Image (cartoon, rainbow, N blue to C red):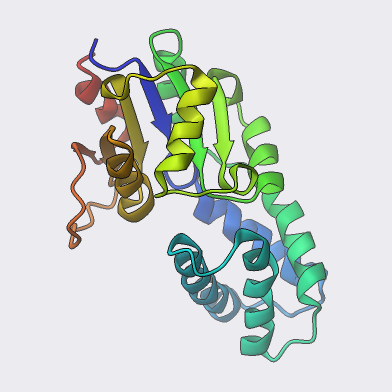
Length: 229
């Protein structure tokens, strides 16, 4: 068996984050008394959020600032009068309670459990990710859960992977595989750390970057072939 440790990204790999995000955002908008138009409000939020998370990934903004700043920018775009701090708090609570797994996630974790040691390495907010993961039926399968806000460092920085391996008490990087959907954080982070990577690409997106994963799969079940099971 080539690999002993499998590190998984959480959102858009095991968890359907877009569904959770959509649900939490609508609940928050309605709680603040804003007549909700998904085609406009959600689209605007996703545009704002994508830009600010890219800034975070590039080290241009901290996660603490990001939590509120994205909603300050959203309020400006919408010409809305809500307080960004209050909106952020409500959104995080709603998001933390929105736990949706992709089809196949639970079955895969159950089959891998006992054969491999597994951990989650995720860029995210501590309060949100801890609650969502704890409430998921797959929570008990992981030997470590490393969240960027708690770690003080995020993917693709190799230090977050080093922290995960320290928590697992494992030093042989040749026997570690990182599985995730993001080329710029999951796969680049694995490359930066000197570990093999598996790009989960269910939408069969064209890779127009110079980032090359060790493996590429389009369905979670295909991971078995990568592992030689």
